[in-house]
Amino acid sequence: MIADIRGASVAEDEAKTRLARRLELYRARTARLIGPLNDDDIHRQHAAIMGPLVWDVGHVGNFEELWLLRKLDGRPAHDPMYDKLYNPLDNPRWTRGELPLLNRDEALDYISEVRGDALDILKRTELAACEPLARDGYVFRMVIQHEAQHQETMLQALDLRDDLAPYPHIDLRQAQSRPVDDAERVVIAGGPFLMGTDDRTEAYDNERPRHRVEVGEFAIDRFPATNRRYARFIEAAGYERAELWSREGWAWRESVDHAAPQGWAPQAGGDPLIRRFGHVSEMSPEAPVQHVSFHEAEAFARFEGGRLPTEAEWEKAAAWGPGAARPRIYPWGSAPPSARLANIGVGRWGPALVGSYPAGASAYGVEQMLGDVYEWTSSPFKAYPGFGAFPYREYSEVFFDDDKHRVLRGASWATAPEVARNTFRNWDLPIRRQIFSGVRLAWDI
Image 1 (spheres, helix red, strand yellow):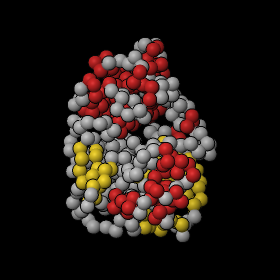
Image 2 (image 1 turned 180 degrees about the vertical axis):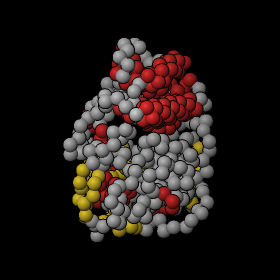
Image 3 (image 1 turned 135 degrees about the vertical axis):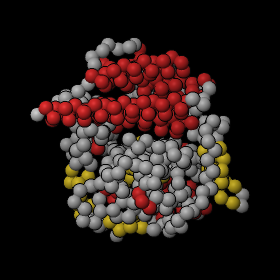
Image 4 (image 1 turned 90 degrees about the vertical axis):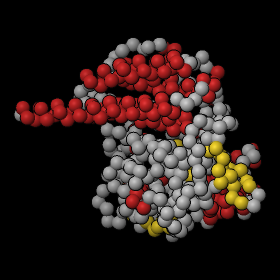
């Protein structure tokens, strides 16, 4: 019994050490992200659909204070006004630039003070507690994922700025080390499978519970759709052909001046130029297309003669395989994401060429399902059968809103490894394209 108690104590200490390292890792990434930016960069609202970066910094601290200091440790609010300033539902993105926010130094001091207290609380928290918020360190993992997701949001805002961002120049013309057929398809057998997860150590509430789903036989692209394929849609006047768009999609198309993905600029006699973080490069035809809205993805799919996959089809292709008895955590298995398996974690500052990660293929042979670009599905964002909000309604439940939001699956090049998994569900409005979003087509059989 003594050995068991000691073993449990050692395991708990090791788990706390890992959590502390991850908390510090993502706080250091926040610091590196804003480090090259001057005060104007961090306070300016670069686009109406994105708030100023200094709001995200303060919000990260306020979220951590709420859940670790107040909910977990019972402390009073640092300043009740912060809850009003940094509540995302009360303050839509386009209003945040007008709020009396903490300035850069104040925000950094605030998140530093909160983090110091949070690490002390972690040392005193029993991870084997029966209380579900603390059990197995769930609330700490939630805080880590939350900060990582806001780093991706901040990168989206910086990609919309008008001037040159102080980040690495990305040469989009990469060498093709493994030539592939970028329109190749994989057939997925029909039948039932278990979708979602029952994990309560890291997964969000909208990923639960695991439930039985039936899908018919279908085919899915082995790779995400490339710039080459999407350019063909543009050349065929896809943005001018109402028959390719849904009624809602065409109404959006007529209300904007978009005739290509975000960041594309036509070039006479050659491939388009692409602007990323203020840097302009020639397009790489074999890289996944990025920065397309749901409406654009749907019209492109219709042009190709295919359709967008449902999120159930996407998850089956990613997590299951012929004769599999249980789902995989990642397409390739259970090994943590690495640079050999997927392009995530801001390793390349943009999508890699299709065919770059054969080791990251799913059991069905579908590649690059995690990393490079999020992929639009045809599914509206809804609760799974038996859904229960935990630990708060505002993360998922308030967005289950009668088909207004569409689900994206996978992960982008800017997604943190802690967020990338087969069951993760991203969502956004069909008009949004500032996200690092692409498309993978499905086909009826």
